[in-house]
Length: 272
Image 1: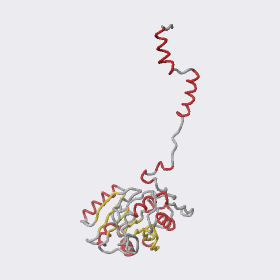
Image 2: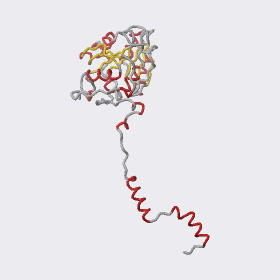
Image 3: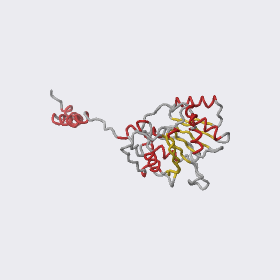
Image 4: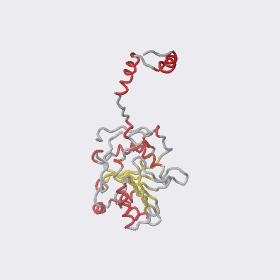
């Protein structure tokens, strides 16, 4: 093909500067080939909620969510479980309490009766179905001092400086983000008249079972370590297998730790 002088001039100014030679084309293809075959790198945080990633991950297995009916209510009442746990927690009329992982409401309805008309109970769960069933039960039983709230796996979503007691009954071993969860829980605990933590401030009450994580339990040593790592102190403990496990009381100590300052616990190899 023969180009006129005008066509040759246009080619030199527009097409030629962008044309690839044979060797340049081969080089470009060689450079692109590895990119096309790259696989996405999976980071450890990929399966964690974004809201929890600033905190250390759990350094232990986490039990799968179990059914909300831990045992029949009649069987638990026959053992005197709720009454003894509430007494051990120092529960009194007029207190404001939270029932985390409330499920079908075994503790919720008994807490409501214990704190009386002048007290308040906030029942929380992350299972929307359980929350709906519990709301129906609360309405049916006319429990006017009970509120219902949907929480998240890494955040109980409780109002700050509000609770005299927060109950975690047979559920802590299922918390997938213990450090984020406990850090956010701490803010909801009521402070004393000086704005600090003492015998007059709020507490967290844990009831769980000393057995391997895969069997829906958590060894007390691991429980103590995780609470301490986030800035709590253990103020009471008793083993009561006839009531379905052990009982522990915690209170915040000192200032809240920033996520980057939290040192995760090492897993006890015997814990399973």
